[in-house]
Amino acid sequence: MQENMLSYDAIVKYFGEEVIADRYKYLYDKMQQYINARKQQDCLFVCEKILQQTVMDYFADVYRLKEFHKIENINMTKIVAYEVYWIVRRKPIQVRDNQAISCKMFANEGFATTFIAHEYLVPEEREPLRPEKEDAFFKYLRHVNYHLKYRCLDKQCLEIMLYSFETGKYIA
Image 1 (tube, rainbow, N blue to C red):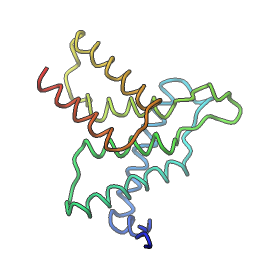
Image 2: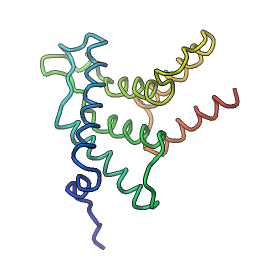
Image 3: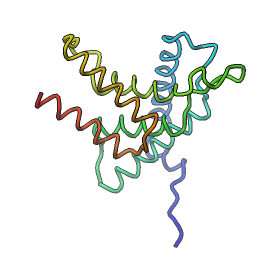
Image 4: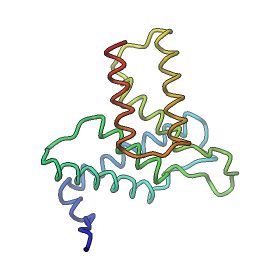
């Protein structure tokens, strides 16, 4: 049985070049900000070709999801889970050749943790967390980061992790 392969041309046609380019630029800028904020420019860089593949893999998944479920839009949880999955899987943040690998071995997982926190868990338009809530939140982020580094990872696992956080906000 031959697998039905999805071409990148079909993905570009479905979403449009501008939407894909905008997502690429958004992620590139966020990654660059992450590197700059940690003063790691001499050690780390965003590999554009790997980021391109990351973005296309994300859009391929979204395309399949929309086609399978016959839906127009996907929710924010899926968007973040699918993006984070492909970032951690493809690793677009790379260590420069002249640097020891230990320089930032888990740079993509660190970025992904920060991305989850800012994009999904505590968007900038929210009020700052109270100190007691902030401690619990940082503990949660450390757990997320550990999971991204050392555990088997798939999109559905990330989704349930994010949904669990949402549920916890409502019942806490």
